[in-house]
Length: 252
Image 1 (cartoon, rainbow, N blue to C red):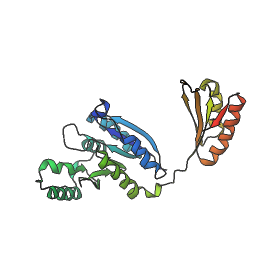
Image 2 (image 1 turned 135 degrees about the horizontal axis):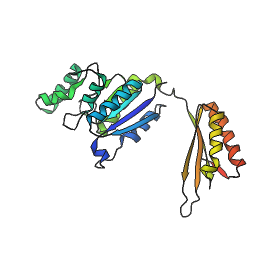
Image 3 (image 1 turned 45 degrees about the vertical axis):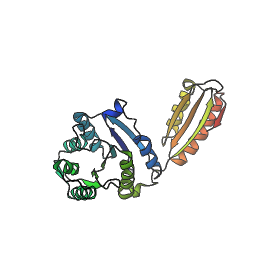
Image 4 (image 1 turned 135 degrees about the vertical axis):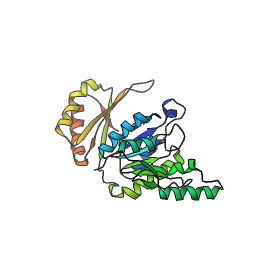
């Protein structure tokens, strides 16, 4: 089963000038197709660091969405870094060139060398259509490089998933079940959590404590997720274990 990751790029995010919205939206887009995000990474506009990240992600064989850095200003490094990581040159993609020329004709602007640079992709890339202004993103192997603008990037991500990974849709079968353990202490429940994971290898135990505030008791959201049949069995064992510890709980 393929796994999905995200690399969100831009100094403006790391310096607080812009708030990232891509991570939450990509999770939503994947979830609508029965998929989930396995990891995400934030990186600044630093080519050396981007090259190293792409070398790792290309080697992993995972599906990776990148957001940002595919323009042609001095702080845009995504296309160059991915090409360097893959050991291939940049070249003008003919379909991208056609889209750029068509867009410039629509808005009455000249086709300059700088504008054609927007179609310079790592050799072997495929274009990702941009429904907003026709300036495409690109896919290289299972890496899909999108603009930083949400109104462009999000429909482009949906197009990639629906065009190239439709066979994955709803194939990642996962269930989740959780309790709210009132006034629970993670340290007290630690042995139980470890025992559940040892007894039910297809599941993962998670624990999310919430501190009490005025009018609200503290609690721990304690649960299991993973293969549906194993989750059902593990959840029953989890409830029995929490009760044996003397805690009161409610289903989430």
